[in-house]
Image (tube, rainbow, N blue to C red):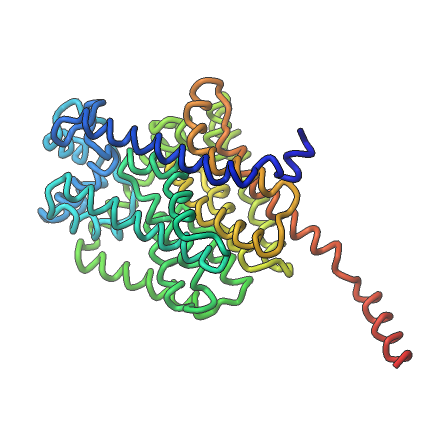
Length: 417
């Protein structure tokens, strides 16, 4: 069994071709059933269709009404949601910086279902563009790339919640594709990721070690421009409200797990899921973050392929934050695409195919397994993939000749010449 996992030969061409088709058919049937069983804007579970998006739409309405600080006040925001969708609607909090009020305000000008459709279709297309762009020269037919991308289980999770995982994946994947060819545009894409500040540790490291100065300029310029635009549109009060709401986000959402530790795919949540207290969870999360950053820095300084470095950076982005949900595992899609593109060109490393397969199915299994056992399967899959990637840096380091040996070899060549 270990030999099969190491080689990945169990992942036959027939399985690679048929399993995504089966997944996509099942997910499509589930989505159609959910829509058919809905009544108006409400889904079969008596929550709004695209449940999490409902609070984004309500936040946009609040901003359009001149109350841009309201989404950051949990009591006011919940009251507004219940006034719109009924007293039985779930509790969905707004935890984004004021940047994200801009798309929310635009979408809130549409009726709810139209806004949800526009949001999901537009960001889904951006996600597909990023994956197709990564694999454009890999020799894989575009149709197969699209089917596999749509069949990735995180897609149906993101659709069910009306979440922003497609956008996150598109920004990360697009930035990695463009970092060498269009550095300023890549910087803009990375800068837009500031709407999720918990993902902000690894991209600066990737850019600094890689000396991507123009991309850094584009990213910093984008964040500055977004900040100025948000102040102009929503006022400084929105930022004061955002910072005032951070203690609630930290204590209730992250530490106490109001979202559900089975949904959060982080080392912190894994420790809490297994019964650990808050200080213990912070210790292990800090250890994981420091270890991931150190390993990533080693890889980024090595002679590894740019696609390998990009994939490792994306994986480390998810490992370093205490707050990453199962729909955020959409970010694994561009990471996996980068590894597949490299593997098809240069051959796959030991355990790489198995790690990719595990990461591919992990979003489907992570929440139910964590609920039933409990076992943090999503974190295990993510860690396994990251370890397989960064182990390449150690292999390269071992193969690098020592400086003294290289000098002796060069001297002998000159003497023989």
